[in-house]
Image (tube, rainbow, N blue to C red; front, side):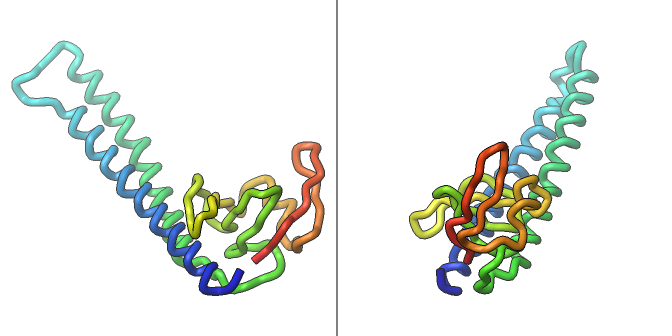
Length: 149
């Protein structure tokens, strides 16, 4: 994979994370509005609903903060060409493609599906520093790194 292709994967990763962040921010605002209720709609359980909405707001707020951090990390990834697994590498394992350094669910780039892999993921400890063709054991199964870009 050349540097232009890697940059496109990074750009698509950033766009994916921005979309997730926008959706999460919208959910947080909706939860807060739902918990507020209209002033003339007082019910017996208003206080408990406000408390629950506040709890949900805190949960969504933490998720929002994590997604902002993931986006910041994605923007700072060095995706220069490489031949060993490390942050910024794009790795293929058994037909699955991963961008190393930022955790995220599946996204598309150039017709290929990628997922993000955090550097604190258990499998990362096993593959860090390895090269294409190297093997490792994860979950009791031997696996081979198909490519590292």
